[in-house]
Amino acid sequence: QVQLVQSGGGLAQAGGSLNVSCAQSGRTSEIYAVGWFRQTPGTEREFVGFRRIGGSTVYADSAKGRFTISRDNAEDTVYLQLNLLKIEDTAVYYCAGMRYGSGSYDYWGQGTQVTVSS
Image (cartoon, rainbow, N blue to C red; front, side, top):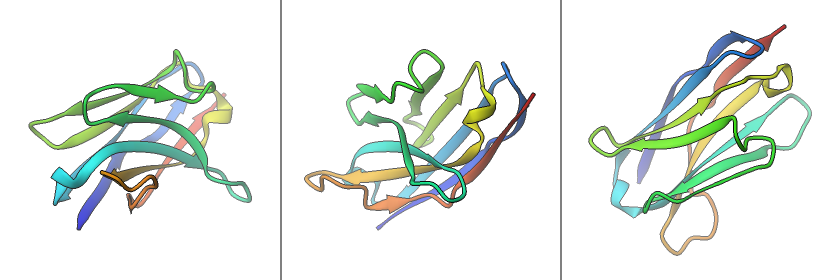
């Protein structure tokens, strides 16, 4: 089992920055990739981006050039840096872990609110 505990997020003005952390514990060697998603009330969960264990990343078009996924290996923590925030980035952000060979996300963080004001 792997546990994902999120922290960070909060409130920022449009054009500002926030950071969301996803601390992993348990059998973290099982994890092939960590993804980030976001969701607003009444909508489907939206893909933001993911980072493979080797370091390569993929981002949704809405995130390219503004959001960055990174990892601190010593802390077993993955970060989502949100820059140039827009009001439409307001959502609950979730991290998720995919096991090797899984093809889907097996573990989820508890969610973190990000609110962007004008």
